[in-house]
Amino acid sequence: MTEQKITYDVVVVGAGPSGLATAIHLKQLCKKNNHDLSVCVLEKGAHVGAHILSGAVFDPNALTQLIPNWQTMAEPPPYFTPVTKDKLWYLTSKRAWTLPHLPGMANRHHYIISLGALCVWLARQAEQLGVDIFPGTAASQLLFDQHDRVCGIQTNPVGLDSQDQPTARYQAGIPIYSKQLVLAEGCRGSLSEQVIAHFQLRSSLPTYGLGLKEQWTVNNAYHQPGLVLHTVGWPLDRQTYGGAFIYHHQNHQLSVGLIVGLDYPNPYLDPFEELQKFKTHPAVRSFFTNGERIGYGARAIHEGGFQSIPQLSFPGGLLVGDAAGFLNVYQIKGSHNAIYSGIIAGQSLFKQLQAHTSPLPADDYYQQIKQQPFWRSLYLTRNIRPGFKYGLWPGLIHAAVDTLCLRGRAPWTLTHRIDHLVTRPARHDTPKQYPDPDYTLTFDKLSSIHLAHINHEANQPCHLKLRQPDLAIAINHRFYQSPETRYCPANVYEIVDHQGIPRLQINAQNCIHCKTCDIKDPKQNITWVPPEGGHGPNYINL
Ligand SMILES: Cc1cc2nc3c(=O)[nH]c(=O)nc-3n(C[C@H](O)[C@H](O)[C@H](O)COP(=O)(O)OP(=O)(O)OC[C@H]3O[C@@H](n4cnc5c(N)ncnc54)[C@H](O)[C@@H]3O)c2cc1C
Ligand code: SF4
Image: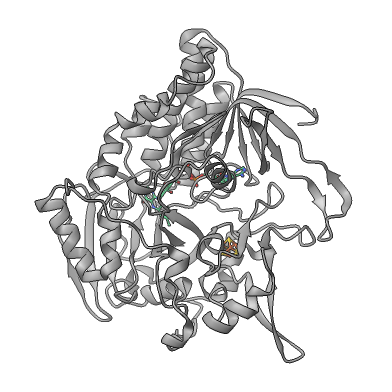
């Protein structure tokens, strides 16, 4: 990309399942209708998949709709393990009780996959259809025309030092112009949130979770390829929504993770330490016998569901996948909805660009999305997540009544708690004690981020912006005992003693782009902006 002015019919920001499905379907329609459109996909990770982190149990129907012959292709997507057993447990500190699956929760005919590997495969399909994919390219700003319509993006400049001074490797950011911009940045996308705020697309704020994941190789008699295990309860307290998962892959690997709802009140809670604790439970620790941890990462997850989906299109573009909030938290799945929304976005954009009608007939994309079964499913499960704001047991009972008796048709819609407002001042709690790591089953954050293979130019400008730097001590430290030092899963935030005065140190080079600080800071004082393209974690098949 050396040209200073680059124009595409469609620019897609984000090479996750939603962005790649959009690009693939657009090009499929071009081929079918003999009408060419230029399409590119920008990805901030050094390579496609580098920033993708998911469970992942995958519902393949959306993939079949996008690429019907995916199973019989000469090179089908790798690492697909059919689900053979599907368990749900309630844990206390010593025991595990089996719970029944509620309707729509079970994972029949699904696969355990690496979503990162699937995205690499999808990117290959996209390139074969003529999509230009630019990894290592972070879209950092929206471009507007004189009518306040989005007309493209600006990429990040590369090679600025921490004083915003150009260094020897300096390269200015590049504007990339689009007839239509597709924001496929996933959960809490920075441009997506800007567009939502600018055009006031959202009427109800979402809630989020933080998902942490480790990948292990294991060689023991307890490994059961195809086993999907979800748990609720211990180690999380009853005021904290969340649960753990263990997925057994075919290739002697397993994925273990914990998702913690960010509307938790106790500022001393440390999601990373809760995951470490989870692995020590007597009912699961044997799975890790003779095992070696080979991967680690974390990513925020959109738990807002139906009531916090914003308007889906804006002048000059639209939102797909988790950027629009299509994850179904009840099913703990979003990648199939990401692909479905990409397919619909592709159809809608093709219709518009082929007919040269601008803007798109009002809200064609929204109207089509509303016809999809996944939209109905999001509607019918909308009250389940907010039901847990009353605690674990009331939440479970409410979920059972809502699904079994009301079948999702309650005449009300519950609202979410606002994550950053729920955190209570530290004086109401006592510090949580977590056991020391044994470096066999349990670990600390620093040795963990080593497995995220982070690449980050140390002297580039800090991409974690404090609106008011003094609040870090005056509010966060004084009233909340600096919760960012605990919720951040990568040890980015540290309180250091500076001649007897506490000071916040930001180790931005450790950041794994989970976006939690952008969500959970009590005063919304931290803004995450994309760092230089190609930086951040380099996940391998997460
Ligand atoms: C711990 C965890 C477990 C999960 N488990 C499951 C599961 O079992 N099953 C399931 O179906 N779903 C699961 N999900 C959800 C699923 O991963 C998401 O729904 C899905 O990845 C959403 O796809 P997406 O394309 O919208 O966004 P993403 O997959 O997040 O992809 C977005 C891409 O855009 C890139 N990007 C973002 N901003 C920019 C920018 N400004 N410039 C350039 N590139 C950018 C990112 O680097 C990323 O590659 C899980 C999620 C988590 C965190
Ligand atoms: S600094 Fe923020 S975005 Fe980066 S890893 Fe920590 S919490 Fe996540």
